[in-house]
Every structure is written in C-alpha cells, then in structure tokens.
Picture (cartoon, rainbow, N blue to C red):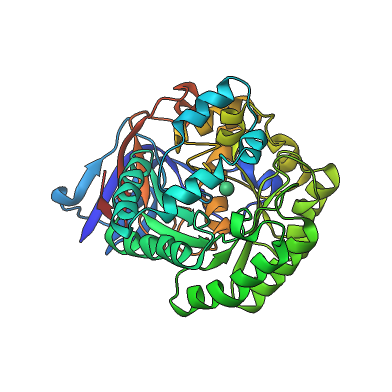
Length: 413
Ligand SMILES: [Zn+2]
C-alpha cells in the first residue's frame, strides 16, 4: 500500500513542534519540487523530488502521481465546531439581518434554546445522517480532523446521544473526530437561576458517564456575561480536570470577562473566540501554553469586529483558526471564506493562516504528534490544490481550490 507523489511545486509541510508561537508561525515549511511517499497510511518520506530519486532508485510507475501544477498542504484541522445538532435556524439569521442581536434573540428564548429543543427531539439516526452530510462537506474543503462539541442537549440523555453519535461517525467516516463535552453551553430552562446546581449536575451525573464510555477527551464551558461567570467557570474547569478531562473555554466573545487569562491559569489546551480579549489577557496567552483559537467566520456572520490575530501573533501567541460551525451564530465551515477573512481582515499571512489551520489546530486538540503537518511518521493526511502555490488560497477569494484529499493514505475526495 504505497503511494508516491512527486513534482509538487510547493509542498507545504507546516513541520515543527506544535503549537507554533508568534514569529515561528511565519514559516510554513515549504519544500519546492517536493515529494512524499506514503506507506500504510503514514508518511514514509518527505523531501524534494531529487532526494526521493536518490533514496528510491526505481519507482513503480503505478504508484507514482505527478503533482505538477498542484500545491500540497497538510490535511486541515478544524479545532472548534458544534456540528452535531437538530434543526436549523435560518429564520433567525434573517431576524439578525433586520437588526436583532444574538443576545436579544437568546433573551427572547430563541437562539440556543431552539436548537436545544430540536436536538432533544432528534433521534440518534437523524443526528448521524446530518452529521455525515456535514463531515462530507468539511472533507470537500480539505478538513481531515474536526473537533465536535456536545452542548445542545444540556440534559443527561441528549448530551450522551450527541457524543455517542460522534463516536460512531468517527468509526464510520474518514474524517477524524475529537469530541468535547460542553454541557455548560447555556443554562437550560429547568435550571434557570441555579447555575451552580447545573454545573454540579454535569460534574456529578453526566461527566462520569462520559468518561466511563470514553465519549469525550475535552470539557468546555461558555464563559460569557449572562451565561457562566469566571467563578463558576473556574469551579467547572477544576472539577472537569479532576475527572480527567483536558480543558477548553469559550472566552471573551461578546464581553471581556477575563476568560482568556483564566484559561491560561487553569491550564486550558485552548481559549476560543477572544474577540474582546484585553491586552493583558493576550500577554498571558503569549507567555503560556494555551492555544488562542480564533473563529473569524463567526465574527463575519455576526457582523462583529475580528479578534486581534495580527497583534496576538506579534505578541508571541500560538494562534489556531477554526470554523465554529454551528446552527446559530456561524452556519459555515467554508475554509476558503475563513482564509480570506484571516488574511484580509485579521492581517495574517497565508503561511500563518496555514499553520493556524494545521499544526496549531492539531495542538488545540492535542493531536500535534499524529496530524497537522506533513512529516515522516505522521498520518498521511494531505490536500492537493488545483493551483501551484499557496498564494492562490487568499487570491482565489472564498473559492474552493481543493482538487483532492488524502486521509490515512487513501484518497477520500
Ligand atoms: Zn463554539
């Protein structure tokens, strides 16, 4: 089971120990006239075509693919999504276009509450079918690893059902899924005014079962004004850590509560959103090991200002970029759109954006040792573009230039 790809005009490896911080993000590890050899689903050789010919004196023509004219990048890691849900909220999108804010729709009982009801009412089969459709679409953009969160049930059965669906999809679908428990995504109506009791319900009743069935590696919480404050968030994160979860947090999206700084102090793998993160929080992220995950398509969909991607990188942060694909604030996993926004509005270079979508995304889901770069020994996940250089990625603005996708050494798109 060997495959050889030669004459890759730009082989973008994104090689290096992840996550890459600050200036290191400028280097995408590009090899000109590159070549890779894939054996049994893993990279066995990465270098130039000349080096390859010296190592492998005779090439079996049936195994060789000539990639002239086509740049190759690592399989992308979308490290923050909510892709399992019941129901769509297209109507709300139009309300927002007429001026309603995300928070005002939420206060009127719309928003997440409507997805909660639809997801509670959705069967495992329905969630599996829509989940598969969404994974197929991700694959078409070159996403080969995706993080998915629970959090639309906020009750025992539905949270477990969402996570079981992801476990099944992970076995059945080529895209790798990293699962995150997000019970405290909002406060469900049955716990109104009893935030701490709801957190205890998650920690004491739901999460031990999640661990027992091996359904999620990460625990996440929506730290935001009007949802969970800093004190409740710390309490939850510390409890989750004791249960053996790695930690993530939705932080400083709408209001600067200091969630990003808290994420560093609590040892979170990533702090996500960060639109309103203060300079003080950015300085903490830069010094710590927490990945700063930016979700520019959400800001775009909400018409909100973008996170300070440029400043974060200049300060030394490890920045990852993800889609935040979800039924409400950001119903897209369009990588071409995300690349365009990141380059044009967050002032990141395409090299930085690619590191953010690969090795740093992998680090945000603790997969930096197996995916996120084209290096010998890692999973053979790669994307062949139909253009010869990565500079076409922002230039072909919001257009998909993915030609084919290899996952674990097999062409799956
Ligand atoms: Zn999210």
